[in-house]
Length: 234
Image (cartoon, rainbow, N blue to C red; front, side, top):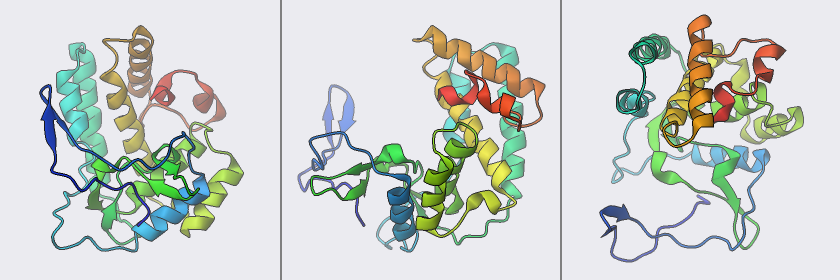
């Protein structure tokens, strides 16, 4: 599997109260892969079974989000709303019927986690989210980046779909999984609010939008997708 490799040295090590792991250097420059390369890598990954010796955890969409809701400074109103919204989304997630077989997933699959090595080959990185779960979990971010945020063009998204061989946006469960991912972006964004007033303002705007709408914070029309704050800030 084309991915960054851990160095064959005694590790992890502890430095200044932090746990550190050491990895081989893949490249000397920052060159990200394409949506087509991401789709091809995920297709290859999703054909694999997890080795018996590797105890991968199950995908737990809301675990970190719930911890952040508790740990980040929030008003009582916002914290109550976010807990309620997380509970609603979790219930919807549990009712999903996935079409693809479960197995190893990257966990944060997007073009920002694909780089080209010194030979020009695309490799996966940022492997700390590896888990076992629905393969749709790895496909939804690229769809969200295309449909919601406009970060990928129609052609780039089509390249992704063609390389992988499946279009998650045609799956009936896509809107729910999209809403879950958008909600997780909000909670991830909140942890930076104390250090960045712009992030704090974005988070407040997003929570307010979500409270006014029944889904995860953006309506389906062009106006909803064009707002400059909302969930795209993450």
